[in-house]
Structures are given as structure tokens and as C-alpha cells.
Image (cartoon, rainbow over all chains, first blue to last red; front, side, top):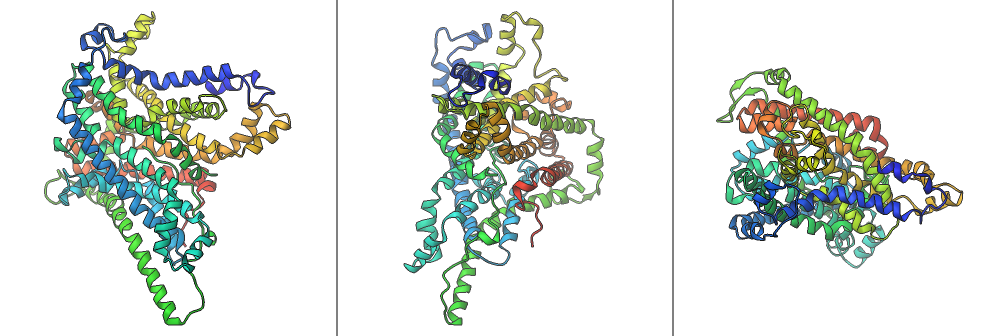
Length: 286
Length: 332
């Protein structure tokens, strides 16, 4: 639909500066489709359940803060935020550290079997985390890790590694060899070179990889659902899901809880958007 | 699922820098140097290899082993049934429904999201004031957690929910539906929700791809008198080919294992009738919640096998030029 409009005949002749009104109209339409439901949920949190039942599509009248206040004063909510933060940060640190070490070797060492090792890691892109969930649960159970943060962090690190290595390796390879030689002449070993020169230079790639791991982990549902039975360990997605199925009649409360659960990801992404698109540029090079 | 792409330059042998300085030295010094190099290689890669093997590869091996037993998950599996679990799965109409639903989601996502994302990406790649804000807004659905998206749409689409109320107030009472309860309709409703959620991912990838298209090409074409549309059609689109194929690949793999949104949005009763089941929800329902561990693992293996075959076929016929060895090249 949008595509058709873009190619309307007016487009002829003036490639760049053309058609601001049409461009804006289309962009506004896209934005509206994207955020109307979200805005509705956020505003709905300011209404009471009777208001919503009486008129599902109306505006708050009067605006009530009670729903948000209720959720925010619940210790459960904060507990879940804390759990999500621990799991996501743990995953991010794990992925970045292990990924950088492996990608560094794959990028800057020459040795027999290097390409085999790389292919071995890239194979992981074909193993969907979803398919492995049942045996993963059984294994974590046998390792006595069920109901611990590790049960979520370790598998998430493992499944994020292939992509991380695939993104990081070209970045680390691209850094000129002269820098490494110069470091060697100054008496810096390869590890010193990694720490003092390579890592600072590849910060954009590291940030991209870290953000992807963090957001994926923050939003994860299936793995925590299976391995975190203990309510005190529940992450935010589990908390939202439980709240909505426990208090089905409290529509306003559900809307408020859902809005608050959305907030961290939205804020985080707002600050990181440029970085993500920029970091992906290398990854989608033809 | 947030993931990107397997394209990258496999950093083929020639372009990789040789390791370490190598001035002429006595052979014992060189041997020590080589030994040190190997210590570093092993020390740096071992943690990643262990975690990866243990939590990605080993479980898939176990899945196959468990799938050969009738097993409730208590004690070691002993009741060996061969491939009976696989036969059972393909005889269960609910599982066949799940397969059909996955097919609808795979092809529906490609056919609907592709053109929309391309249009939006071309639009948001134009230079205009406020572009950054519009980009951010277009990405919002993709950033939200699957669970929050599911709950949100579940509320909006319930029988007495907002969507139906708005339709009523617009005088479209005849369009009002039981969006999530009508057995014939629910999978299409879910497809629409998934489209809303994931089209942003395609847009992100395409915008990243578009920013790699050299501006000079567009300018040269414009000087030659090409219209904006001609430039997109003959210059930009062909250069976007690799990005589009990578998105198709990731979308396909994601659609085959889709779980979260379906699980949260659809009513369990509707799911258990097959109307809104996918392979992954079927697997979790039967394996984890009904404690049919042997059977559930058989479904896991089927899900994996289908994803694997689809990935390899896709790679063979479409992606070959883009990945060139990253995934299925024979290691030599």
C-alpha cells in the first residue's frame, strides 16, 4: 500500500526534495498504525475498569492514577524488574565476554582448524532455541539449576553466541594489521593488543551485540516460563502474564501493568536506535 | 526474536592477518612462541565452546534420544518405543493443524511483511525533517516484549473489547467478530498480530541495507534523468537483494518456531482444538504441561528437522551468494 503511493507519478523529476505532504501523510499513517494500540493501552491504564467496560474506546474521565500507583506499590512488580535486570545483565555480560574472546581468536590468529571452528559456531544459527527447550529443561533439571538465574542466563548466552561471533568477527578482522605490528614493536603481546587497542576500536560492534542480547533476554518468555517456577524469581514477562490471567476482571490494572512493563524496553530502545541500525550496517552488507 | 543475519564475510583465509610478529629467531624461541599461541587460542575459545556445546548442541542430541521412549519424565527412560512417537504425531489431527498454521504464518509473514516493509523502508530512507522520530515510532512494536504485545491485543480483540466497540460505533456492526475465539478466524487474527509485531524488524534490516547503498549511485542515476521510482526499481532494489534474502531467511526460521505471542494471545481451549496451535505451542502443551516427555521431544525433533531442512534449502537456492560458506560450506 505504502509502496504504491510512493511511486505515484508526482515522484517524477524531483528525486530528493519531492512531495513533503505525501511523505508526511504516509509516515504519519505508519506511525499511527504502530503506536495507536500502545497509546491506547497506556491511556487505558488511567481509566477505571467500569469506565472501560462502559465504553472500551473512550478517553479517561476523570483520569485516575490509582492503577499505576497500585502496580508500582506492589513489591512483586519491583521484584520482577530486579529479576529481569539480573538475568538480562548476566546474559549480556556473558555473551559479550565469551563472544569477544572467541571472535578475537577467529579473527586474528592463524591456525589449523580455524574455519572449521567458525563453521561450527555458525551452525548454531540453525538451531532454534524454541526447538531445544524441552531437552534443555530436562538437562537443567538434572544439573539442579531449575529455579535459579543460571537456568536462564547460561542457555541464553549459549544461543546468542553464534550471532555474536558472526557479527563481531568481521569487525575484529577489519582493524589494520599495522596497529598490531606497532603494538608488538612496543612490546605489547596479543592479549594486550586485544585489551588496549582492539576492544576500544570495536566499541560500536560490542554495543550492538550487547543491546541485542539485552533486549532479547529482557523480553524472553518461553525459557523463564519453563525453568523459573518459583514466583520470587519471575521475570517481568512472566509477571505480566500471571497478573493478566490472575486478575482477569481488573482490566484497568492489566493495562497499567502492561504499560509499565513496556516502558523500560521503549526507553532503552529510544536511546539505542541509532546504534542498532548503525551496527547492523556491517552485518547486512551484500 | 531479535536476531540479524548470517551474512558476514567469513573472513576467509587470505584476508585474515597472520598471527604475531615473526622476525627470524632461533627455533626454540619460535617453539615457545607457537606453544604460547596455542595456549591463548585454547584459553580464549574454550569457555565459549563449552557453553555452546553444552546448551545448544547437547540438548538437541538428547531430544532425539528421549523421543524414542514413552516417558513421563520421572527416572531414566526405559520404555523404548522406537519411532512410534513420530508416527503418533503425524496421525494427530491437532499436530497437523499446527503444521498448517505454521505454514500459514511462514508464507503469510513473507508475503505481507515483505512488501509493507520495503515500502516503509524506502519511505523512511528519504530525507525529511522528523525522519528519526518516525523511524523510532515504526520500530515500537518490534521492541515490545512478545508477552506485552500478546496481552495488549488479547484485550483489544476480546468480544467486548475495543476493536469491536469501535467497529460498532463506526456503524460496522456486521464486521464484529469473535477475533480470537472463532476457530476459522483465529489463525488469521494471529497472523495480523504477528505482522504488526515483526514488520518493524524487516524495516530495521532494510534501512540498514539501504544505508549501504552508495549515495553516488542514486545521484548518477538522477543526473541521467531517472525518476525517483526508476532509481528505486533499478538501482536500490537490486542492491538490497542480499538484505531481503537474509530477512526472508530469519523470518522463516522465526515463524517456524513462533511461540510467545501465540501462547499468550490465544485461549487454551482454542489452542487445544488445533485452531491456533503451532508446532512450538503443541510441543510445550504436550511435553511440558501434559508431561508426555518422550512425545514432546519427538515433536521437538520434528520442529528442528523442518527448520533445518527449510534453512538448508533456502540457503542452497537463495542465500548461497550472500553467505558463501558461513553455514553449510563443507569445512576443509
